[in-house]
Image (cartoon, rainbow, N blue to C red; front, side, top):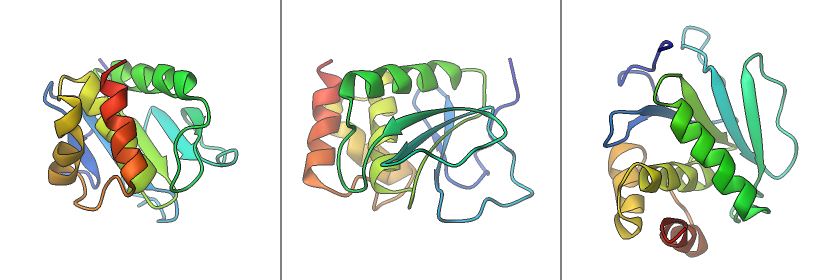
Length: 145
């Protein structure tokens, strides 16, 4: 098992299973003292910046939904699986809408019912997470498979 996040690390969400995943906004500089992820998933409309760790990209324009939903599901499932033993981060520009939506989807994968996942992420990550009605609907539909 690799090094994991600490709940005291900024932006870390604890899922019901105990998996820890960091959510972050790329517009905010990364604290040089903060641990780096071993795997990151970047939710952006265009190609993400290069990072020195393994990463994946979901084409996901701001305030919208993933361009390729089956690929997004596959990438999020891989992130959830890796979070059992690795430091995984999910990030978009601001760290709230797309990141919150993806974290809510990870909560669904972790057993949180789809209709409760947004509230779970807002309670444990950021009260403004998941910004649009269609992002909330995406999380509910994600739960349906």
